[in-house]
Structures are given as C-alpha cells and as structure tokens.
Length: 87
Image 1 (tube, rainbow, N blue to C red):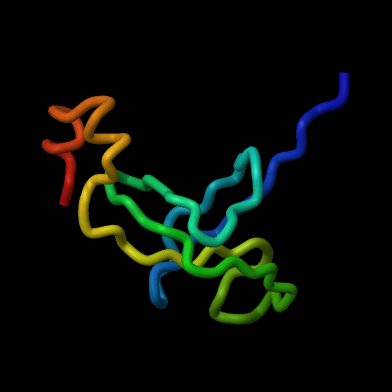
Image 2 (image 1 turned 180 degrees about the vertical axis):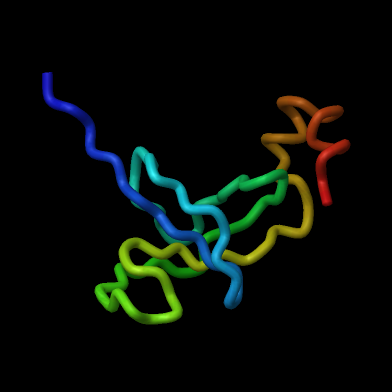
C-alpha cells in the first residue's frame, strides 16, 4: 500500500510566523479555514517560496487573516467549548 503524501506548511499572519504544520494531509488553498491554537483564520493567499534565506519561510506558505467570530459549524458542534476558548 502506498503512503499518502504529507506537506510541511508554514502559516503567516502579517509578519508573524505561526507554528508550522509538519504533517498536513493536503496543501492549503485560498479560502480554507484554519483553527490554530484556539484562533480561527482564513487563508487569503498561498505560495511556494523557493527562496531559503528570505523573511518568509521556505516551502509552502499560507498567508492568513483572523476570522472575527467562531465559525457556525464549530458553534453548532460544541458551543460551550468554543465559546469559552474564543479570543
């Protein structure tokens, strides 16, 4: 049985490099939601950066913007949990 591909994905919000996902099951896409460390984001652009010495990390980089509210599917699934964790 062939192994499934995994991707290393870097996440950026402005100039801040968020924790890297070293075992992503798919490459991110524009519009994708990302829930990271209790905060909800939306991917506004995705690039592959070949420049290894640049301020933006080398490899797959998803540029994110923060989502203001807890997305409805999360509220519906577990309202008490997500209401308590929203920042």
